[in-house]
Image 1 (tube, one colour):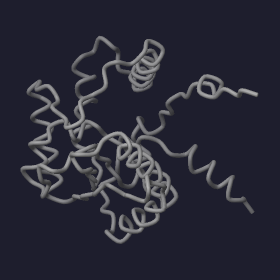
Image 2: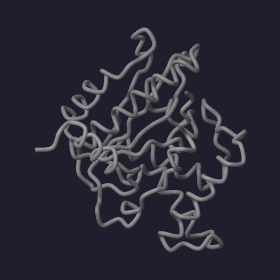
Image 3: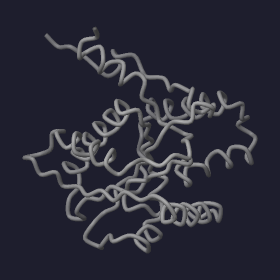
Image 4: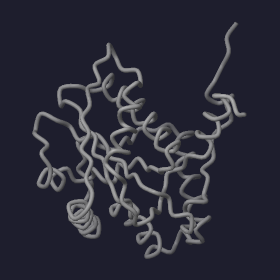
Length: 225
């Protein structure tokens, strides 16, 4: 019988950023359970300064269609949290390596702009996931609350994996907050931080057999005696 460590290790190692979901709805009770369990994640002074909105069905399709059309227009993202740009060269290299590895795995040449755009646009349909969850924090809060949200989302990803569901954390889905606010009850006192798609993984999708690399542990961990 596997011990808790082995089960957790297997769950972490099996989790991927899912880029292809089955057309199969998720019962609300399951999403509720995943979030409820994940609420045990640590936060600064137990603040839990985040709010989630889960959408599905026609509303999800409508928002995804509008996001896709905006992306096709070539509009620059105007996220509440702008994309980071000041990455050091060693971190930029990891990002470039990921793109090369991923598109190479899919058999898409880096010069094949139509195919690359086709793959990129799948982000805005949430890769076909039946449910998208938008994550908001108070507009007056920043670093500590963002850190708390990140830990919370890490728990959600693992709990979902343990429940037989897959996830993909997506900055793309919050690229244009005006579209999201038009359809959802999000006031100006909230920042739309990020979103994630959740559903049942489509094992026939080649992108779902791709495993991104991780740097050697010695690059991120140092012992000082």
